[in-house]
Length: 326
Ligand code: MEV
Image (cartoon, rainbow, N blue to C red; front, side):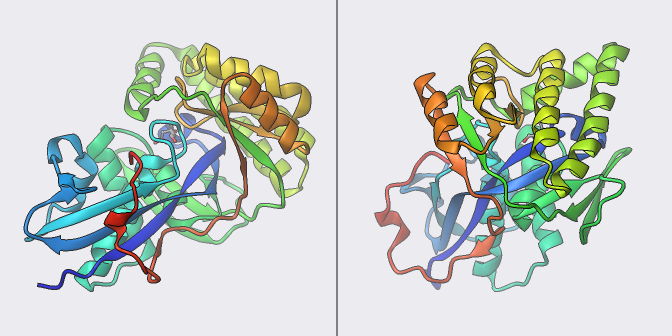
């Protein structure tokens, strides 16, 4: 039995426009960000996670992604992406783990197969949602979903039931975003369910979802033309629409409102209910200090991060690192 370590990592992501509406097949714009999660695997006598016995009932991503394994493994995760914060920690973990397992098995995997694995793990763990996060965390850079006029390279189509998602690459001009974390953990599944219940019983909610789709198309043009003023205005409008859908909260609204005087626009990002907001700005230090002064944690985001990748340069035993909660 080889007990060599195999490590892979994947970036987090933030949504510029279109979260929640994308679940219904509407357009969305997403960027990978320069905070990553890494996952190391090696064959072992028992299944362990970060040095402790692995309880598959509490780790559905691990249960799903190891479903065909015939041997036990040690797993070590290390995360710079806060969990339940809307920054794609679940998709990034799935992508990094799926890739590390593939490397260990010596089998090849296309990017599309990796997305299918990561999206499958997300659906298994949370029961609903679109393949947007998995696509962004696997491919990296910028991703446009269901943009009718997208000029970027076509990556893949994914269908589920009567919904389908056409994913293309998106070239992003240099722009500065600041992410602000409220520190409130809010898992995605219940928020997606909340919007589904609202749209099931209200035409008004369906109209809001449609409108998010419409302004995302406008935002795509603004982004391509490097028109930060229009993009910022549309982001703030999107925040208002998401608030009407019931997925914002006081803490998010407070951070959004506090940053607006120093930003082109700001909005919640990801599933909401807590988690993170994002502001588009020319004065990132000022925006970051405003977020911190309101009790949030700020990350000045470098965009264009590489997608899921193997980490071949493993010099130390990953168990020596103190892992953070995945
Ligand atoms: C979460 O990052 C984005 C949502 O649109 C859910 C999804 O697309 O799966 C809220």
